[in-house]
Length: 173
Image (cartoon, rainbow, N blue to C red):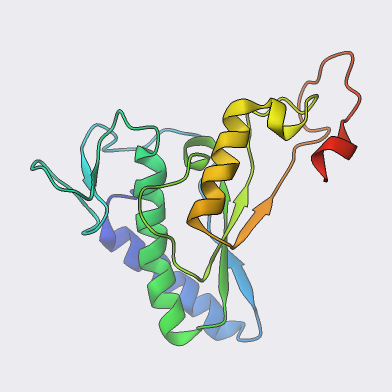
């Protein structure tokens, strides 16, 4: 999916609305990135206020060298969908993962009907979250962006060190 294209966002929104029309009792739906980090147009500055690539300066432009660039593009795309869903289904939440390129919080605001599932794919699961400095900083920054935040862990999903002790007590405080 081309996250830079509002026509693509409209098409996804239309599909989501059709699904919700056929399943009107749902309280949430999932829309997320695929398990990769390759995106088209990732060399172009992006104006998240207007949802488009730009060439001129603006206070709402994020540039490709900014760690929040791809996350901002994705959440601008998702905000567009969330607005359309909220018009017809104001109580439906959109669940999405914040991982790969979306692990860093975006520069744009996030709509209130989006629930972010923070899933730090590069986290060292043998250590507590505060010891994972980059993960911890991203989590702290996500808390500034949204109150609709859930944490997802990858216990048992990836290679762990031979001393893997699952520091659960430190992690669930």
